[in-house]
Image (cartoon, one colour):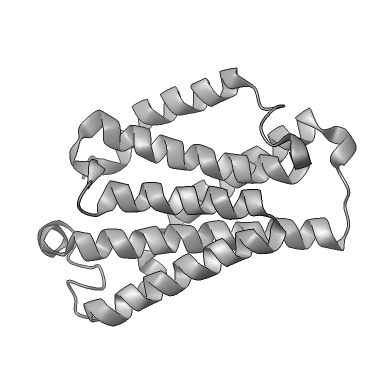
Amino acid sequence: ALIKNTRPVQLIYHSGLFCVGLGLGWVAYPENFYLNMFSIFAALDLLLAVGLAWLASVIINDICDVPIDVISNASRPLPRKIFETKPYLELGVLCFALSVLGGLIIGVQFFITLLLYQFLAWAYSANPYRLKRIPILATFVSALASLLVVFLGFFLFSGEDYLSGFSWRIIWLLLISLTLSLPVKDLK
């Protein structure tokens, strides 16, 4: 039930965003491309950290949406009573902690970016903000969180330059296109 609830399509989406960031970083900083054990494990660590960040956001969303999910998503773990709320929340906290720790292992900018992602996911789903109730703002927040995942991949190549080599045109393209297209996932 937990694996099914990870929303595998979203995991693929997040992995793709990370890979887009890697590709953009490689284009902007080809001289920083080194294929060695560290770079491979750093990319895999961050890919796992992104997956754990997504899972933590799913768990918080599920906990905040139990009354709604009983009607519209009855197959999720909490409405089916597969998990009690407290252990499910503890699992979410564990995913959160492992995600940001995975980022910190690679560098502070990864830690901060994953922390920002988690904050946006929390503000999207949980009170007092629960931004998912506000149509355009909700998808903008989701687009911003998606952009942070792209940045994680880019940071592997940019080093101390952070985002200085990242085109503002791409940032605007991603923010606008994702803000306009992400509502499709909520058509159900």
